[in-house]
Length: 320
Image (cartoon, rainbow, N blue to C red):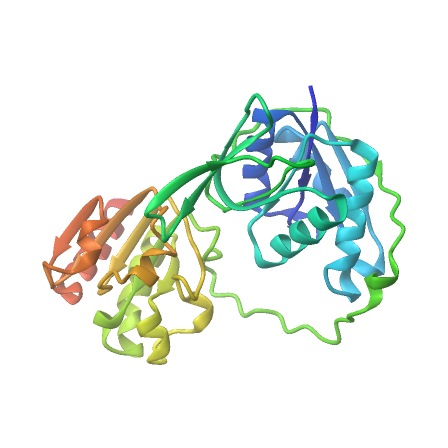
């Protein structure tokens, strides 16, 4: 069976959930070979083997931390040359999509971004994508070279499948461009204790109807009761009620959780573009004609300040 390269997203050896989802998808089309780079790369082998990686290629060098994406592209190209894979899979983060694009140019291959599903095909892997603000679903395949595909988080389940996970050191020769852009400083993101927005299984978002920064406490309380991430519409962000990093939509982040709860959000096409691929959508809005209700699986017509606290209380009661 052909091998499939999977780029590992990890922090000091702690593998992030989207990578485990990629391993599930990779097993549909071949044998996963994971590529882990940077500090703690070797520490990823155990969990990667538990989720189907037959081999783990690791490399660590100062360049991965001190410079931008080019050293990682060099390493992934080295892995590509060593393995000759049937496909290369990466998660659809901003950095990974840049790595994917640069790799595709180097190896002369087609690129598919933001896939939401992947299956084997007679002429190569077939990727499912959402197009035009998720109004259409398309199926695509790369017609030239080895497919390079990025996949949205929460597009596949995490399915353990024990494999060898043999660790091999990857020899990397860095190109002249690798040290072209140096990272001068880093500021750690302040932790809220909540899941990462783009990776969360549940997202609770607030919009214009929240009517003030202080009222987002109602949205946060519901999110915390569910172990969810907090999102916001562009209207709420533009008003200064919530940080831009939490914006969901065409000009914000794209999410695809198992459950998306929209509170006080009208459902403009720009917002729908960032959340329409959610598996189950629930909306709370006092306007029965709000466009969001055309999209939802469950809708509640009512004042969010009456509905959301009751929902939070009920969840906490059941948990208790």
